[in-house]
Length: 189
Image (cartoon, rainbow, N blue to C red; front, side, top):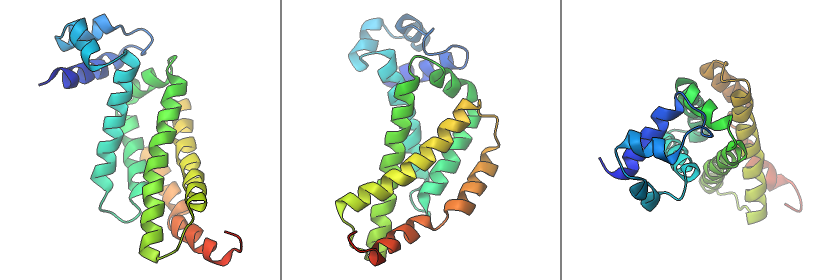
């Protein structure tokens, strides 16, 4: 196993019991069986390592859902289930000085997920969409998904992920398509 993967696994193991604030590069290096020099060769900081870990897990969930209809709903469901299964790890990331960066990362990842969903839906429906409108629709859904996810984090992930996902499906299922179709009828869009 290469040093990057070992460092990621070490951080995840340490996050089960410690907040990111309490974890040191020395602890990560010792847990991973690598030198501090090797750690810094691959990562600028423990925060960059945390970012790499979280992005990697989110992107794996995206890949696992890429073939289904309204994949973004599946991504949200699976990401929330991942968060509940790894509750201590994510709460120890979220409830640290890294919280603002955590929230920015969640927003950025949901923005990417929704941008792909909006463009795919517009293409499938053959709806011409200006870049400005694409950004607007993407941002609306990004804020909804990231907001719900962050609310779940703030509540300590005490919620049932499947219930939240079902509710979200009930409220938002088919909404991207309806949103895009509405741009065909609104003047000045």
